[in-house]
Structure formats: structure tokens, C-alpha cells
Length: 91
Image (cartoon, rainbow, N blue to C red; front, top):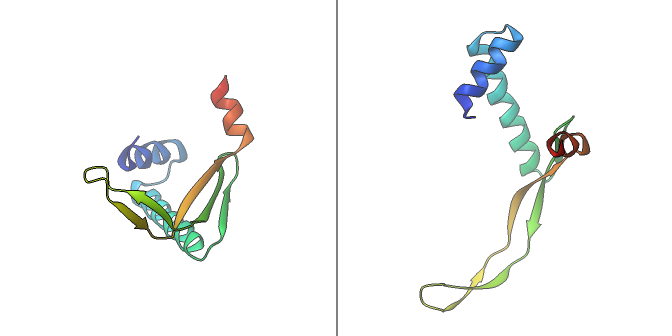
């Protein structure tokens, strides 16, 4: 499901306008991104928890040349599914 399909489905189920649903989704994404950028976490009830994790620097290898390279440390988003979601998908 892409963003347009999500907006349409939420709008039809909730009775809200597409424009208001788009604004809410954009604001939600912005708030989540800002919280993760600051190193926090966001719990989405029934879905799971989003948090940022720091990946340490590591040594890698260029697959085409075989040359050893240093991969820098970085912060990545991480999602942990809620038990409720896992159980629903397992049925």
C-alpha cells in the first residue's frame, strides 16, 4: 500500500477529507522523525516501537575490488513489532 492508497483508505473509513488525512500523516511522520533524530523512541499502540540505534564503525570490503574500507558509525531507525501485531500476523 502506498501513501495515496493509505490516505484514501483512512479517509473513507474515518469520514475525514483526504486533505486533512494527508496533513495528519505528514505531521505524524515529522514528529516521529524529530523524536528519532533526538535519540528518543515512539510507541505506536498495537503496532510496535520505533527507536533510533547507533551502529558502530566497522571494517567492510568493496565487493568489486576486494579493497578493505572503513564504514563510519551511523544512527539508524529500528522497529520492534508489538506482540499484538505479531500474534495477528501469525494467525
